[in-house]
Image 1 (cartoon, rainbow, N blue to C red):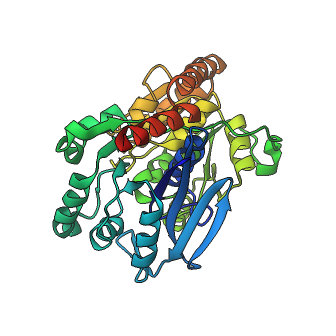
Image 2: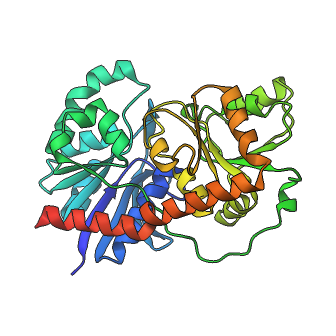
Length: 366
């Protein structure tokens, strides 16, 4: 009989697309081959329904609003209780304060794990009211999972519970074979650097736009999000013509872009960027990586001088210098790309992720 695990978070595919959604999808997908049955429980604008997303079962309930990036529902409690009863074990994905509230109100009696993706960085005032609930939820967890050793060591919250912290890096399964689309379809003719992700404040893309100004390379930004209009306005106001905003792309388009790009860049400058799934995707595709030093898992994925370059945060000049040190040298591109691919195979594969989570789940139930 399969072990039943409920994955709980505030967003998921296909309504929302980002690195954390990908992380949950990969956990659910890759633990299945280890005898784990997962259902993802998530709020949705369309209300309550059950559907299959690429082999992963998803149960939704009505989303009624959002406060300070915290989705909430006025009718969630009955479905939380029902799904808690179904599960042998629950895997919450932090941060999401509404889930902490549901743990309290539903009087959860099942063991649960918390995958700790990020500290709460921005809502400092609201944190004063939320902390007691957060500490109650974390204290009740059987295990806290950090996504990198560096985040486990640098997070003041995780250090409070270091005796029950495990480290399981995020991982990705390689996509099935697909037809690579011609890069001409994107109207790109020069070497380009690729960013993939949701356009949020902590991605710090304004520095990447400034780095591209007047350069001999192009920047492609694939993804959508709340910062898109501001960033497009910034590029227009500064006369930056070599930055292309593609919006949301399909998986085929995304991996075509990874195939043709010279390097993958993640300019995030806040601790909200705990890992950077786009860096794993770039490594999987044998591409050099460029990221900023922010004391999180990004510098665990991208090793400076080995898989790419790690630069000072919030510096357009540092980003530009790093890009130019890579993009015009085939030898450098190949050297970093080979090392990045090797690191992906050793640490960040979907098989490794699934095996480690399945072992963790079983160890807690045993």
